[in-house]
Length: 149
Image (cartoon, rainbow, N blue to C red; front, top):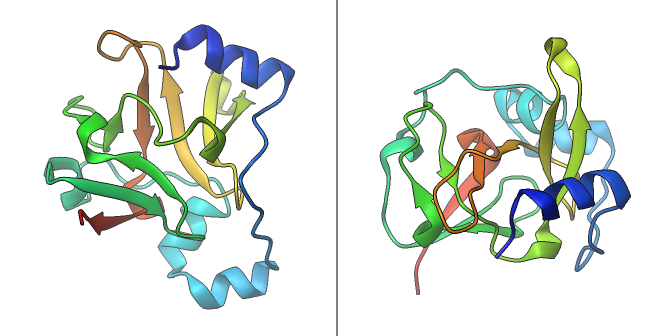
């Protein structure tokens, strides 16, 4: 289980090697994504809080990257944070999420991105539930909910 020290280590010293890479041009992403999906995932935007039904959806299954379909989070690690965005305690696989220091808007935060296609997902914070203490605060528009098998 990842903890805040692990996240900071990745942020400062390099991320895990991704299982594969998906790289497309900006025009290719624009043809694949809606304007809002493109704004959030490719331009590091943020969707409006409480704007998605995924916030209150707690069915079993996986949440995949909207851009490349890489499994990112499991519904078993989802929790109600009260923030208005889907929140998770850890990724499905340590190599599927990468971390970058984000100093925008006068804050210092850790950005979470898809390690396969570099899609902006949201941010990770050290105020989540035990045992790992992490809260992945993720834009719902950057995710596709897959049904459990």
